[in-house]
Length: 188
Image 1 (tube, helix red, strand yellow):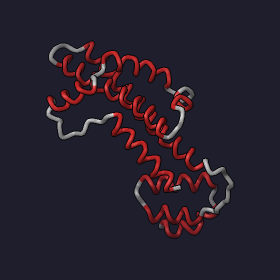
Image 2: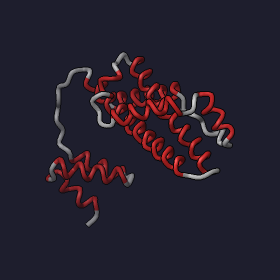
Image 3: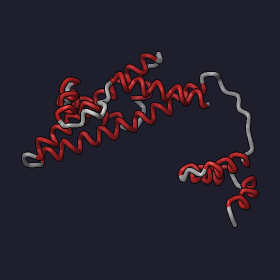
């Protein structure tokens, strides 16, 4: 039996079962199957405040950015630990990589603060209650102490021969966050 034949029965599935099918179709890039499942979904009407969509978009952007910051913190800590246990010349290369991760940890934090300021939101509201806050506080402190400065990060990227790769800055990250927020709001 093919999926077109199965789709006739999608209406009898529970919302959880249809969500599973939606996610599977999305993961494999099957737009046709995704559309079939959506077409079988019953529709509900909800009344929400006009800030709901914007708040939902903000939470989605926050969640993605938070995961990226936690990943950078983990890479910063891991690379620092590897540098401490390595011998030269690898230790120097790892220390530089750790310092670059430290720079990225720092600018991601700065970008979040700037993004929230532009959106007239308190950055601490989500930061203090979300998982990983203690880890990010330690990472921010260590990154400030031993991560590359902006100038050192630019010089390192040029020296390493990766000058064609664009070094992220707080300003470029704010632009990415703002763009993501607008994109999600426009899709709602």
